[in-house]
Length: 487
Image (cartoon, rainbow, N blue to C red; front, top):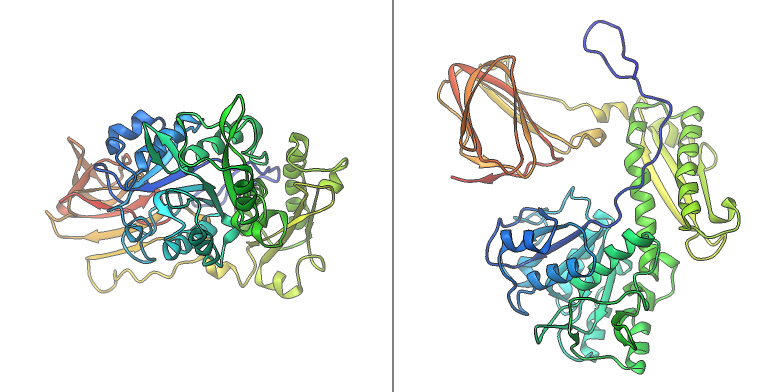
């Protein structure tokens, strides 16, 4: 990549040959109660054994997290994010906004959320979880209460007015070891299995959606009940002759009302999220470009190439590309003169997941480097250097999608430093002045001006400033600070 040859630090020049990469589709997160492991912190596990090593044994129907994770991996799941809740109550599983652990999954990239122990009867917490799923562009797999389907359960579903297109409900519970447990862990595994084998746009239901790792259905649904569930937007699990229990529906809760395909079918909802996430993520460079026709054309070509790849894989329906998707961007099409002046690039994308030329329309807004918008990329600092020799400041949620947080710190005092702590991501210390002695795990690491120290994720660390004080820049590889204090 060419570099700027002006004095100062070299600045990479943006390549004009760019592509939109397909984002991960099956990022499954579980939130639930267990007996051990870190509370409120996302931990990735690759197998059921990994889960049990960290979080302990499977428990009971009131704390079904372990059973859900076991069934996820038994049905084809590959990697999961686990968040241990502080308790098994609905309020602890889905804490109120702004409280401890409420943002545990922020920035995780989750696309499928399972909360074992939360049921459709916990309407306030379900609504809260769905709001978070909407912000993540994720779907929530929901369990009804145990036992037979009841009119009260259907009434609870009508008490969920918003984001119904992000809720997929499955009935009945399943039997594991002679015990009834919620089905959504197994369903999440089927979804992951379908994504890997056939694509996010394929329906995770039908005769191939066999449920493994279970002994049967706790309360089997007959044909009449299955039809009633479908009309209510609920997905039945049924016995299939010669195959055993299968997932027999892939609708979202809003399917009970009229709406577009993404408001009726789970794979369409997830495909639309996938397209939006992929495009939005890989257009981050636009923030450094001027909002003008050359940029619009480049964005259009990139987006059309991405959608053409989906069309060739069979994700979009139509005999010709123009029947399968469209892309619009530009002044007079998707943008006004005011948008251009404000540095807002508005992109309109249509995809046909079910029938040719019946488009689900996605509208994506990306900031550019206009005169008015450029100011939003700057952070005004007031670090106090003119007022004394000791100062500290922190910055998170940096503009431009930086994906990091910063701490800037300076002191002339020797022998001071933070308490022992750790982060779920790496932290990098750039030592600008003075020195410090760092404790990293079991190691003691002296650091001085001109050196850079990298502390791995989930590693206990602290430091004590040297005799000549300390000034440093601390980079956290997360959009927000996540700290576990150990003393």
